[in-house]
Every structure is written in structure tokens, then in C-alpha cells.
Image (tube, rainbow, N blue to C red; front, side, top):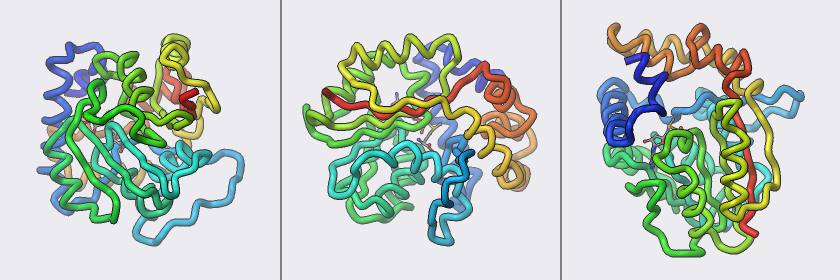
Length: 268
Ligand SMILES: C[S@@+](CC[C@H](N)C(=O)[O-])C[C@H]1O[C@@H](n2cnc3c(N)ncnc32)[C@H](O)[C@@H]1O
């Protein structure tokens, strides 16, 4: 299972999509208290920026929330129409909907299991979760002011086509807030796919050091949740997926083989 996580992107798409659904269903089965609402590695500022103000019940998810906050912080969200693609267990969608007050926030994921979980769990005005595939978003052209995509796109069947679909559903001058891990030698290709889709790069930053710092600060919480909830035979896979210290994923960020890029792009 561990090797499957490491080699996931190299597998045929016919296996990858059902695997996400299976993975979500395993988490729904394991996480009976519904404690896990994020599936990203997190972000922590290294510049001594002032601490992000959070309600006490959001503190547990501080680092994962800080990633979402970093990704959207330079873009106007209040009163806007926002789409998120690959919203997972919905924590990021809930954070943005509650703190940044869009007019409507549509959060889409490929897995119907996780979408049912999100619609039952996250009750926020204007926030809706829908099933959909990133490369074929079921929305009309020029529909959204902002599209958000966090730690989801790297292994899509056709990332170039996904970028063109984001461009299609955005209104003119709309923003695409995109963050994901990218192998060092794949960065130039992905950046050029974004530009060929028609986007103007407003901001781009390799935040791998910030991600490693977040994983360090969040390590105890991640490890203890996994050892409490996950059956022994699945623990190594969950630690790898969570980027816990000592895993290949953690080391790949720490040694620079894997970068983590955050982009703000504009439909020009
Ligand atoms: C690592 S999780 C990140 C979830 C969330 N963005 C977060 O930060 O917590 C990646 C998510 O992308 C979704 N996903 C993977 N491939 C997809 C596709 N082709 N279309 C839509 N969602 C997809 C998965 O089901 C999963 O929920």
C-alpha cells in the first residue's frame, strides 16, 4: 500500500480514480468522530508574519488552514463566485466560506462518498459540495470569479486539459489559485502549460520550506491521530500519505527533490 502511494501518479488513470474513492471510504470508516477535514501538508510562515487569527475550534487544523489562507490571501473573495476543484474532506472550503465570505462557494470532488460526507458535515451558508471530475467541470463558460485547487492536480489524467477547463469556467480577469507538490524537473513543463492555457502569472513561489516547517510543527498531532485511529496494517500508508517525519514524502520535500508551488494566475 505504501509503494502504491509513492507511485500513485505513475499508475493508469483507470486505477487512480477508483483508488481515491476507496481511500476516502477507508477514511470515512476509520474517522468515526469526523476529526479529519483536511488532506494537505500545511504551510507555516518563515518570515515572522503575524499569526493568522482563528476561532478556537479551528486551531487543531491551523497548518492546513494556513495553506489555504496563503493560497487565496492575495485575491478578492468577499461577495465572489468561487469554485474549488479537489476539495477532499471540505475543511479548506469551509474555512474560506466562513472567513472570506464569498457569495457562493462550490466545492467539487471526484468521490461521491466524500461529497456526501461534506454535505452532511459542513453546514455553511453559500457552501455546496458537488461530485465532478476536474478535467470535465460541469459548469458553463465564464461562471466563476475564482477557482481554487490545493494539492489535487498533480496526478490528474490530463493536467493541461484541466488548466484549459479552469480558464474556460473563469470570468475574464478571474483568478486561479493553484498549489501542489511538483517534482523539481517537472516544474517548467507545468508552468508552461499554465501559460499556454492563457493565464498570466501574478505570483509564484516554491513554498516547500514552509510546508516542511508545517509538517514539523504538526507532526505530533498527525502521528498521534494515526496511531489512535488507524488499524496497525494501514499505519505506514497513512504516515506516508500524511507526510510524517521519516517518510519518503517528507524527505523529498526536505531534500529538495519535490518542490511545492503556489501560484496566483489571472485569466487575461
Ligand atoms: C490530497 S487531497 C486534497 C484535498 C483538499 N484540497 C485538501 O487540501 O484537504 C486530493 C483530492 O483531490 C481529489 N481528486 C483527485 N483526482 C480528482 C479529479 N480528477 N477530479 C476531481 N477531484 C479529484 C481527491 O478525491 C482528493 O479529495
